Image (tube, rainbow, N blue to C red; front, side):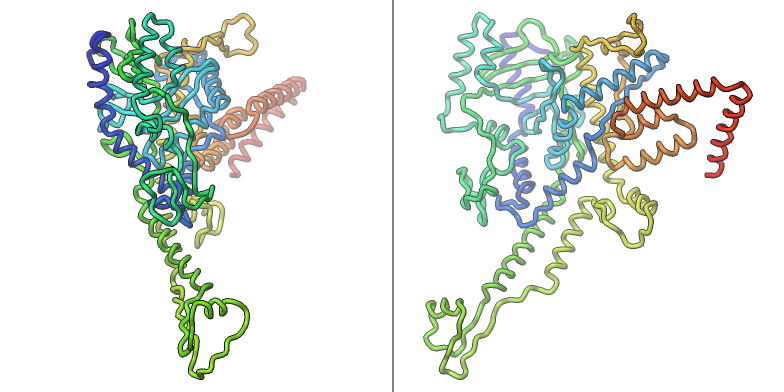
Length: 568
């Protein structure tokens, strides 16, 4: 894009960037509201279903495709730079892994996975704070792109983030300017256009609805179109949302591809048309040639950036389970209350019927009088139908008995069970690989963000006191790539990976330190240091022996290992 001058830039940004990018926002907000209702209540009316499998499935799927328990990164290069650069890559990867864990950035990625499953996608925005890198989880209705049919954020001409700022934040940004008072007055007058009791629709959906349960809960009735009152008064049903003070100002941050600079230009605007950036230099406020957004998307959809909701194929089955359980509840309630016909009784009225509800007896002169039970019986296959509905749900969701940890007919050993898991889990493995690739891209952005903002010195040799091995992250080659090490983000690969590592160790392809690096063990560095000390003590002991005995010990160890491998 060719950006106009500073005077025309605010209007140009609204007409050519913000409005086109936010065209579908309203429809996506309404869809998200419906998804949240089904997700948290298992119903479309807002009343809680007796049995809500949707929320449980979303939790199970997110836990299966990603776990932050032992997330580790590794760095590699497209070209060969030699041993020194490989050691730098190892140090950089270890530093990245620890920063991600210590700053809870891995938990931020997990939160994005949990939100991407029901909503189709979630976006993590990378920011830099006084303490270092951090991320903010953003929902799809808070974002807009220039071309929704392009599924790669890196290929978008423009990316727009809609946000809300406090008046204090705006004043902090513009207080140094000569026209600060006039700009602040315009912004505040625009914020006060509506009634104090009115909440802007965008603000309602972005702040109050984002990631929260439904706002209105009417147990046993359709959700009312207005108001914030629970008709039941039950705290567990009247789920609350964030209470945000009035007076916030709508703002937009845009990352636009600037043809003149060959990089993104960051444009910041506060309503109505107050340009915060750029003022003099048009530059990328993140890092050169990159934007600050990492997209998390478990179910991609062809030619649609925002992905597909996991609930799309499960809502009908959840509706069936809800209706059948309500039917069972109604009929079971009648079993206790009973429906009776009093045939031949004289003077039967409400008072006499109420007396019959108490303990005692009843006398009637008419010998033909009788009480007939008209209570409908529960269908014989009622619970079998519910069980079948649950099975249908699990089949569509991709979790059969084996993947749910349950037994299966014909399985008699652990190896047989692991084989069944591998055969039953291709869908989950595909999703786990997709999450792993996105997690790697997420880590790579953090690495380059730290390289751009963090001047900390690292070294590759603990015995180096002269600084010969010192380096900065910014000195890593441009072709550095970050990968997730050893499938450490994917629980579904954990057992297979452990078996592979054990096989490589037994065959002599890797040593003890490599095995510790590959397995999710605690205190990894301490264990490796102990292993080095044991190996050093062993070598010193062998060297203290006579030469002939040293040869016998070495030969014995070699033949013993060979015999063991041959026996297996």
